[in-house]
Image 1 (cartoon, rainbow, N blue to C red):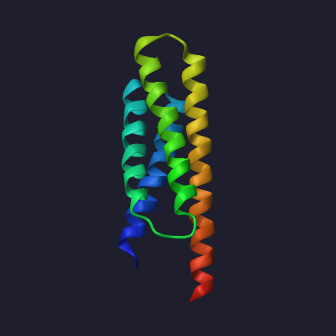
Image 2: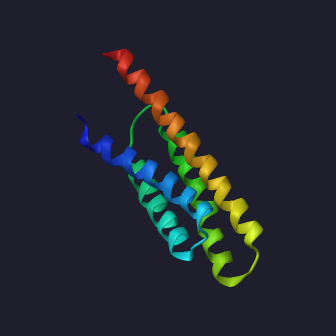
Length: 112
């Protein structure tokens, strides 16, 4: 078992579920945790060397650039619609990222 990949997929999935958790229960702490975990997931994607590495990194950056402004807006404004829109964008980017992970995993399985 590749433990590096396990940790990487864990943080990618945790990023998705914490962002989705914020959509269920609007809580500043949940959004902060989602943004923090997504940043860790982005940092883990820096060292990946596979066919879809650029796409994985880009999708994680997109989620970061949705979650961080969403947290700032939630703290400074009362525009809940904009916050929800940004978090939904981050969730979509994380779903895309996990779809790329599945595609990459299936390609690696074919090579063996």
